[in-house]
Length: 387
Length: 229
Image (tube, rainbow over all chains, first blue to last red; front, side):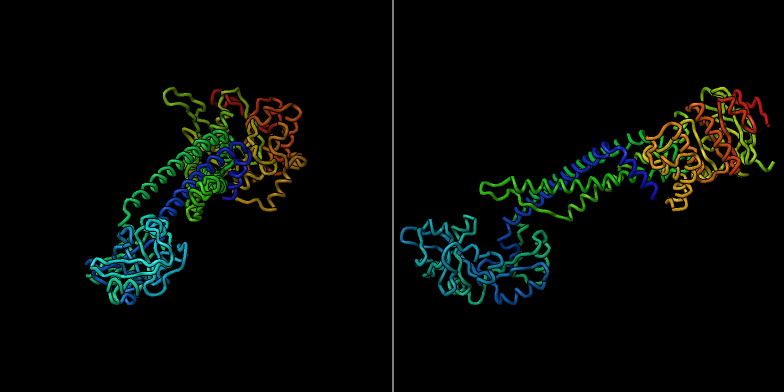
């Protein structure tokens, strides 16, 4: 083993130019893999984060419209028990449609009431509040900044709303929020739980329980567990995945195409190594011939070339990781949006990089199999006869 | 006839399938342990074929080669490799050194093939052999940074490394000037006398052949002359 390794190392060292070329070939392959892999992963992460990061990922609500969930806190406990490791930020929401009337205009809105503290997890209201303060007291609300603009409402104004059942209420506007989605900014009015419960006459009941999961991609599995745990025919459990099927199929298409690119890069790397090593068998046939004449066994002689493939793979993988990370970093740093934030955030997944490197090393070693087989077939007589 | 270290029994070698060329005809030959033998003959007479068959690098079409009293006919490739490594030393017309390694590393190569790592004792032994062939000053030179004579002497040192019973040399001085040639034959003789190593040397050079204990001449794949002094 040691001798085969030493000979492999010496062979690689003796033809530095050739070695450098193969290493560069592998390195470029690995770096493209890492770059494309990180790019796609980073892109998907930021896309998913933008889409569902500040939204409920699993929602539990009554099957019949207009029904309420009673004893929300007990239900939340049951829900969390379904998967305590994944479920985070549960919040009970009381909501309903209403018509907002100003002297000039009226518009349909949705009033959503929740415990401000509990809602911080999903909606990050504290960060989204652009002006004023949260409505902590009864009949205090905050409204979206686009709605405020549209209806020229100012902080301190009192607005009037009517429920579909005809109940009227007066509310004090204490702040404006910006959820960064225009339709929500135009239609949502947020308030504390009691105000909403009183206005919609739900008593102690809430309209739905919302929550997030740590790994957004297992939301469907967690939702299933929640459903089983609740074991309640009157409730339904929905998750973001079933509501965003188009986005998910887009993401999986992206993943598949990036996988395709990576596979083809890998194939070209393997072919490159195999062909250069095959040439090097011819170049080194004198050496191999004499080693065999001196008694080196065929498997050992083959091992010399497998080691060469392995060493090239290791070297190429290391250089490639450096190149790939550098490439991803420069892409994240220099390819930016108009506001200077990077188009795709810099994202390093060491697990993925480890797999890439592992595949490159394995592939290089396997690519050396063909030349290794040729070596084992080489007859020392051929070399000695032909000089 | 038990003291033969190498014995060739009824060996024939035929090349080609459609057009058959017979290189050796039913040859019978034995070499005594510790003897110094020369094989001469025209080029194409079959002498190199004979040496390669004795060296187990080539297999005879018919007959068998017995080395150290053991027939090599049914040995596997691996077993033959071990036999060559332990019992035989080769010196060819071309030195066949590994150009990627230094003289010392080349000499150590047969030892490392058998044992993997070169321990201190083997390193010392390799240095001693290099001293013996007069290369102590260039032992750390790469094979490519030595003269033709130095390279050939390194190849001889390499052949001696595992203390083989038999050294097979095919025109070992074919590429060297007459002064270097003399030096190398003196060296062979010295090793033959001191270590009792059996030498079988192919040569064109009648002067060299005359110094051997025994001269075997081969003509058209047959022994045409066998003189024991």
